[in-house]
Length: 112
Length: 112
Image 1 (spheres, rainbow over the protein chains, first blue to last red):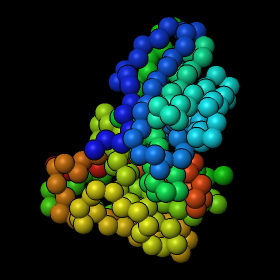
Image 2 (spheres, chains in turn blue, cyan):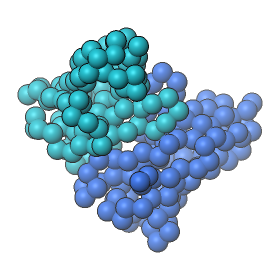
Image 3 (cartoon, each protein chain N blue to C red):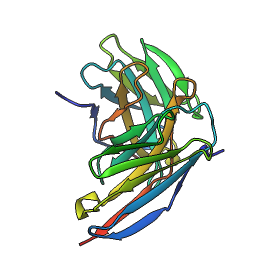
């Protein structure tokens, strides 16, 4: 049973555009929702994370929107740049959930 | 400040052999988690170590075992290797109950 579903699988955006990646989770015990960025040959790097007591968190060009009732959260990348081209993973975890569970990833390509 | 260090970076093993992968956590981190990432997929949780004990385990067979040393470094051992064990093995460290993982660049294991 996949506990975190991520979409789309791939995304192509023009430079300067907005990239949006969505995730849905099932386990209500999750209380920590990070996004990771992974470049080829590297491990995932923590990008931004949110807890369910807030509906939005912004760090620079990256924003997480969180909808607790729908059990969904999304990553918005504003003013997307070619250097943002990477694979993005959402994850869900927390004290009661124990381990972090990852989505299957979204490959983002930003065209110049 | 060194991040998470994994060794070796690449490894080729024959089916049926045993392998040991090593991880040194980021300075200040005391919790180590291991993940298996197959090509094109998200990381799958193997297990987590804290205070030299296995605290959480994912859906992996007993062929996968681990250890954490007093200096917080960790090893992942896989016995009786199968072709399907070929993957990128990622080590992630964090402070206890801090869910912001720092990942290493991984060990690429190829089983032939």
